[in-house]
Amino acid sequence: MNIVGLGNAGCNIAGRFKDLGPYRVTTIDSERREGNHIEIPVQLRPEGYEENPPQISLPEGETMLIVAGAGYISGMSLTILQQIQNHKLDVMFIVSDNEILSEKRKMQERVTFNVFQEYARSGLLRNVYLISNSSVEKVLDNVPIVGYYDRINDAIVSAFHMVKVFEHEKPIMGQLEVPHDTARIVSYGIYNIEENEEMLFFSLDNVRDSCYILGITENNLNTDGTLRRTIVDNLRAKALDYSSNVSFGIYPIDYEANYTYVKMYSSDIQIYTTEGETNNGD
Image 1 (cartoon, rainbow, N blue to C red):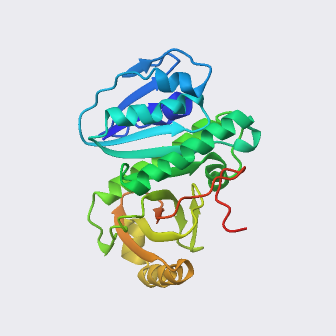
Image 2: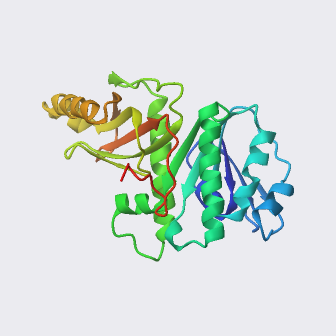
């Protein structure tokens, strides 16, 4: 899978994929970086980046662009995607803590936030993954200032990678359903079996499909006689709560703790607010 990081945030997240396996990482930024990197001149406005895109060539196949919408360099996103439009394209869009952004950067983020979703709805993108830094911080709880973005980025990449790994394996119980073709606006996060609570990295409105990816330790699989009933009862309740399609897969893992995730899909354009989250009708 090709991973393309655009701008400072996109490059920092993309760089964390380098040591995880079958990822070919390319970074594009105005700062010099190691590895397969394209350095570009600094521009003082988004249009400057849009008018001066680099030439990019990638092996065909799955490709994901990672970009934070508030950076002016995000103005280059669409011209980069046009160069690789023959690939199976996804975008991971990082929503900033935009209550402290300037109005110009808020406008830039709002435009790209909406455009990527429209691209996904039209089928030009397979999926757009929406990620909010503030939501990830809430999931992690009490993230110190020193190493703040390292912790946030590690959580984003770790969850995405683990979900990807499980999706390519056969579950020992359950089956992850293919989402509706129009449900291309996606977020993912952590699922707590005991509390029956999910903590998404971006709160989606009008969820249409929910997939629970449950990596369970061999010890729990062999000794917990109530686990299957708990999972089935919990997710049946979820299906009623969300009025959506719910599926799950259980995967054995050789770790000391369970790794359990959720991936949710919506067909609806999410509404950009000053907090960088959907307004949930409030």
